[in-house]
Image 1 (cartoon, one colour):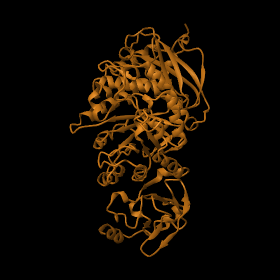
Image 2: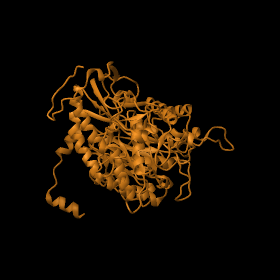
Image 3: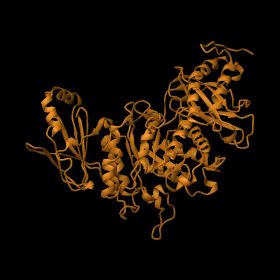
Image 4: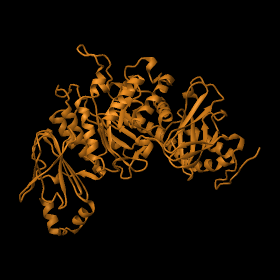
Length: 604
């Protein structure tokens, strides 16, 4: 049998070198072999050493062992490699693990998990990111399994095609500034999410289609949901078991179709594979089984347009935080993955413990209790506002907001559309804007039984509640604007602390070059800006966050400040925009302050 051999600097001349390398990696890197952080660090060292060897040695494999047919797939489109196991496992999740190495035309490597899909069928899903000829190589923890271990092949990646934003611009990733999200082609992505925790698990295919199409028409671009519900019958459960979990393949295949439907509608699926917040913490899986299940979810859906939500809460001991640090490293660090959003429930102090974890890409904030003056004060002065002072930075997104239509546990009042909208705008402007989420009670809980005096299912009615109508104006407001350059700027206001009531808080943000200023006033009719806030070439306009309407903004100037009056009662945004080049020139030409002036300002 003919062989092609290329000698590398590691001395690998045949496939035996690859198998030897993989056996060492697999010893440390299977759910059953995972033992400690030290083992994980050893894995990282071995991976860096042997991935290059495995890539080069791919060319040394027997020609007959490779897939003969070279297929084509569009850039940013999911492709699938089907494998047939030579062993029929009793519990495939517990007895074997498959991974694949994909090598780009540039020689860059990507590692992904494979997954069992019933009987002897296994699949590897991958999304190529560069046009040209790709190569792949599979590895299995059961090295004697000839159907899963050592399979290889090639395929061609062609130009992107498709109508969704993901097909046109690529998957979502964290931008280089580490403060906002973007597509693979650097198109900015402002997260406008719908929190629908139980929707994917409890909806039928037709219900899910109606849900995703409705939310897309309202200009949402994210749907956030849980893989498993708290009260789910065995037939509809995503997985079963505790000490040795197994997946429900029928459920998983239904979810395949739902995820693709959401993506086609332009919605990113933000999925929480496990939920360890509140009462659910008591039913937490053993650590090794949590790793197994998380890896399966990544293998099955990681090549779709998704983000991963790691949801847990901590106590004062920090044991739960340490548990998820270990799980996160074991699941995410070894492979390529979509953005991971860390959601620590009400234990937001736990975020600092994950700041150095390279797999934790985004910090998610829960604001479910921000419904009265006391809790609003926490929101306005808490983690959303203070995170930007910490390093390394992360995009900040509110993921779990109060549910419109529910009764607040803080003050027994119903959460209104006005409160939902104001929370979103405050959350967006208290930090560099990365994204916000909306939630309605009946959609999030997927309530299907009509109330006594109604015919329609509650979740259908909740889709058009007034709070959801705030998303389209928010999307329109920032369309075509460099929202990611905005930073909080309380100093832009003439009297930033004039209101004692947090519900009247005026939020201000501007770009470093002052070519864009955004002021949000929740209810006060007069907005006063500090002198010099608006550049000479600035154009001002009022934007209605309830309707998307734009009106002219006229100011009254005096020696102390610049005053604008809102067109009518209710919340409004004052938006000042200017030519960026002219504004930068104006800022640069200002006379610099002397040392005495700076010292005086500090004393003041």
